[in-house]
Image 1: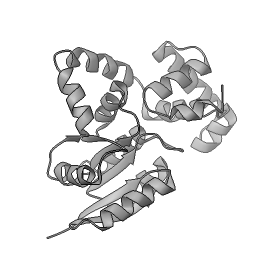
Image 2: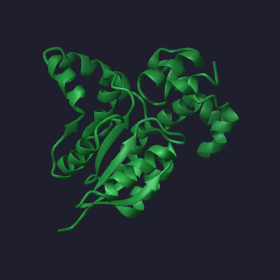
Image 3: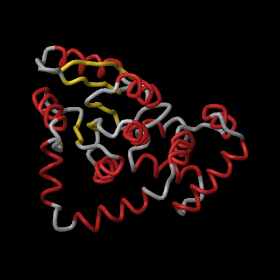
Image 4: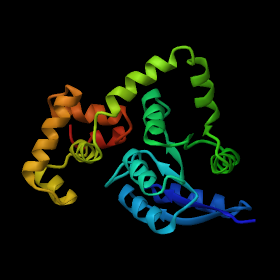
Amino acid sequence: MKKINVLLAEDHTIVREGFRKMLELEPGLEVAGEAQDGRQAVALAKKLRPDVVLMDIAMPQLNGLEATRQILKENPAAKVLMLSAHSDDAYVTNATEAGAVGFLLKQTSAHDVCRAIREVHAGKTFFSPSIARHFNRLNPLLPGHAAKLKQKAVQLTSREMEVLQLIAEGKANKETASELGIGMKTVEKHREHLMQKLDIHDTAGLTRYAISTGVIESSVQLTIV
């Protein structure tokens, strides 16, 4: 029987190696490749065409949410399982809106990770047990809550999401322009659009928004505030 090919996208080397060693011991699963940032994940997914992507939600260069959108645009058949140390409602909702079919906490057991890979490959969804229980309890209230989050999230284009991440990481306009290969005036226009769409009018506010939605981890904020 053909093995399930998995792409690991995780910027922390020790965590990524742990996942690789775990999957190497599991029959029927095979690590197709490893990425240490979102841009590399997109490039490898295009090249390797993995069945399943284990995607960290907060990564340098390009966050997991936007990387997921770009991967699925290129290869709609791929299944993305989002990884995070956080289980905030906004993280989970935004991950599913980006196209992820599952959400795993990093403290999830090896058994559940392997089970999740098999289930999403078979066309099902999978959430860490604690997240599944939480959302089941919220179920009567969830539609309105999720719609509110969705409404705010889908206002941003892919490029605006990229600019938001770099702003939140403390990059100046010149650095952002260089990294994205666009002009300074274009960066300034994207920044202006972000502030208008989100009704947020300073860098600190954009950073808080990026943290609350999983675009960057809260530890990044310490370097720029």
